Length: 464
Image 1 (tube, rainbow, N blue to C red):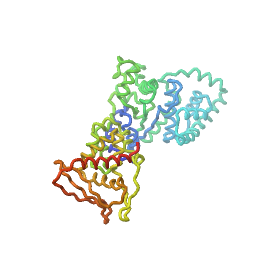
Image 2: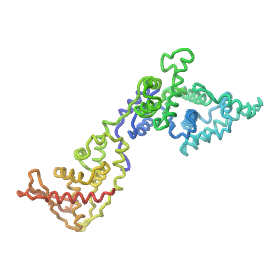
Image 3: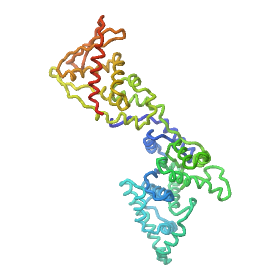
Image 4: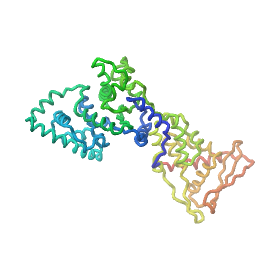
């Protein structure tokens, strides 16, 4: 299948939108392959009152654990450039310009290139970020040079100051943080009806040390009130890091708990740790109940097979244990596994063989069904399904390697009596038509022999 019709997620979108209004810091929890990316992309497209700043720490090229948050700040900064939260036209204050280049004494273009290289940006985003950051930082650099010329500050002074401040703590409101906070504050002032949301993707795919470093830093400033000698009466007092309206960490909550206990030990207090980040609860995203109905509907449309037959051959219990990505893979690019028969000619009429049942056989194979189980299931079902008969019988012509326009195939009914189906090519609409008549006799083995061989012949056209 080239395109898949995804499960309706309207209710989940509405619930998550409401969740964001009441949960400044939260965890978006979903298992691997459960459609997180599709859901979050839908949020970005449909939530007109929200702007998402999305970062992917899993892509960072990190040398040391202490580098992780520095890279996050640089990533956020470039995302603000890309999303026009920081405009290249924005003036840089002298204080910020001087602070930035004292903290980052290397050439500003080197700083940009080094940052983008470590963040592993896609080429198009890297070009956009470089262009905007260059214009913005160039203004700051010009002001910094004027300051250096005026005060006779040389590179040695910059390096000495850098060495002194290199060991700053996680509460430090450094210059990059100031630029981010000021940009977000200015944007929120101009867009009071909108929310700006930091989305940290794929957190349970990164190294545990980096994972908990990120969580610690994103929540550590909550303790800053206690450090100053008073307790915050609400989350709104402490606010979010950088001034974001929401910070959303995307991961599997159960995985995070297991990683935490493995990393810190079984006896550590998980609830106390995670409550600082998501004290009001998390958002669980699951499609467990909808998956089966979605899957049956997709196969029915793809193969033109009745859902009751699909449910019989692939029970719901086998579907619920698979994630959405795996289910989609079972239905994707099916035709590549089919050895299509050539068109056949009956009385000058060119016909193509029906392939719907062959497609269904591919899916059954991908679910681990062997030939014997497929043959047995189809034989048990075909008597009561006319569509299946229409998909099976034409292959008799191919198997027989002849151009007969009429065949007779028998099968037994529930009482063991032989039912004969007389199939022939109908020239008016070029479809197979058949009539059936019940005989009073009993013929042993005709149904099993003919139908089993025919289905087996069809299965031989499925490539492994």
